Image (tube, rainbow over all chains, first blue to last red; front, side):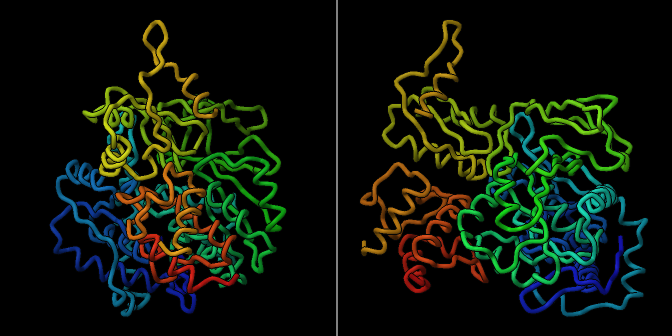
Length: 423
Length: 85
């Protein structure tokens, strides 16, 4: 668990917090949590330092960390109901970082045997749309990170800037476990606006910054940063949705850097990479194996076979090809949800006679076709979805029809609706 | 609405393909959620357009996205005080 305690772990504009600072804060928090009766700590922290401190503090005090997929009220209500006893933490007081402990105290408290088996539940949208926990131990995530940092050549000379929330598996890896495993610092915020990303790249210019992001963010970055930037990233890492070869090439050219695309899922963590500008096939991390069963992946550190959400084809050179998604799951802005559930949500609205949701392009916003005589039907849908799911899944446009087009057997003609959208 | 508020309302409508006209927008309405119903990905799209049009840097800095994008009024004020061209 413990790397080099003197290494900076969190980078700010004008200061750093070392691993020792964060581990000390986690020990202080754990003391406070001893008096907290709840068995589960729901970690809603946005800042990386608070997130890591709460994660480690929960482990030290014998609590289970819970990472929700979003902070929509209904999502949190469902998770809290399922957990029975839970406590939410949104942020920590700055003073918790002001009282660093000695190396001896930290090393003694972070007894590897006692915390490596600590549990984390990452919640994702299950096939029915109900939040479903994916269970991990701290040790699994550290082992997975070892494979990743080897492939990505991440070490203490590097730093990380991530646009992904820490509660998401890709964000958890890139903003917590890769930095801890590689002894590489991470930028303190989840960078969001392009100017925020460029400013953090400037500050970390001498620290070989890896920019960890998504195709959506990277495309916007190219659109805005039309001139050469002063401090290009040492590498760009992309995941959550397919990155086109064309976008990867433009990124490499404009930022004079390499773009590495990562493949994985909440269940498996990241398991493979490809050089998106030139390669269409994926190379698995060392020890990751598909050969025995192409619909499942073997994780050596967990000694476990796990099902994949995608169909894959194993190639003779040890690489694999993605053939497409298997389940009835849609992804928008890197977040996934059950399409069955979203359609149920739409059709439960009493003012809607019938309706159907579809996604015209992968990872793009959803559209809805509805039959309703209600004059404010769009507002109704917006309100219902806002309460139940991440706002990313609110359909737009919402198109009114007199009736849904159906085939002779009563199936909705999705192809026809798709063409209507593109018309 | 002031001219800059109208411009920004139109820029938002164009950037994220909202199916409404400028006249239907109250400049004090929240941009996110129950107001215009936009989300953080829309905010990213709008920030890129604002940067291109006005040379304004949109940064969260110590504020958060919801504060800058509170309403058309607030956003117009931000752009007016930060624009470089």
